[in-house]
Length: 75
Length: 257
Image (tube, rainbow over all chains, first blue to last red; front, side):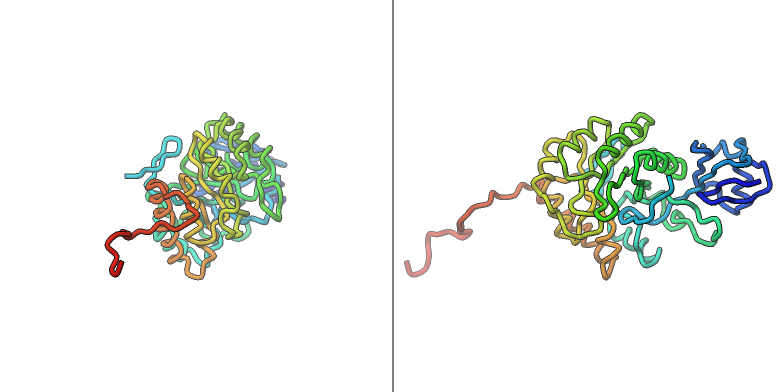
C-alpha cells in the first residue's frame, strides 16, 4: 500500500500498526514521536493504531538546533 | 543560593544553551559541561527514513543531568508550531516548549500575532510555554496574558552576535513582566551576557555565540562567568552615573599642601 511518510510517498506492505511500521524502518520507538493523520500519538498507542492506504505519517526526533533554521517544515 | 524558577522548576544556572552548529557531538558535550547550564534546547525534525545510520541527539545528552527544552525553531505558522510542540512533548520528557513562530526568513524576527495565538492554544493544552519574542513590552504583556511561563525577548537577531540592541526595552520588559524574562538571541560574547543580566534579565539563552566561537568550550565557560558576573552586579546595585570625577582617596593629608 501507499502512504505518505514524512512528506514523501512510501510503499509498504499493510495495513500495519505504527509499532510495526517503526520496526520495519528499524527505528527505536522510544526515541521518536509520531503523528498519524495530523494526530500526535501517545507512545502506548503505537500498538493499537493502524496505518492504512493513503494515510499520512510523520516520524520526528530531536536534532541539534535552537537558533538559525533555514529549512521550512512542510505544513 | 540565588535560584532561578520558571513555572514549577528551579535551576541554579541562569544560562540556557542550544545544540546547533557544533563541529562534533563531542565538542557540544564539553561545551555544555563547561557552560554549567542545566537546561538545553533541541529542535524537532523529521527522521531521515532513507539514512538510518545517524545517531539520535539524545544519545549524547545525559537527560538525568540536563532538562531538555524542545523548540519549534523553523516554524512559520501557529499551526506548524503547535504541531511541532505536540510532537516534541511526545518525543521528550516534559510539557515544556520554547515556542518560536518566525515571521521572516532573513531576520528570523518572530510573528507576534501567530506567536500569541500559538501560546494561547498550547497553554490550554497544558504546556509550559517559553516564547521567543521581539523586545516589545506590549507583545510580552500579551504573551504573559496568554499564559506564557516566561517571556524571551531577543537582544538582537538570531545568530547575529550584535549584543543587546535596545537595552531600554529589555529594562522596561523586566520592570513590567510578572514572569521571568530570558534574553534569547543576539549575544555575541561574554560581556553581552553580563550586560543582559545587569539589565535585570532572569536568564540568557544562547547557541551561536558558543557553538560558533573559535573555541566553543572556552567560550561556554566565559558565558557561564559572564552570566554569573552580570547577575551579581545586578543584585549588588550599581552606582549612579555621574558627569564628573569623584576621588576615591582622601583629599586631606596630602604631602606638600
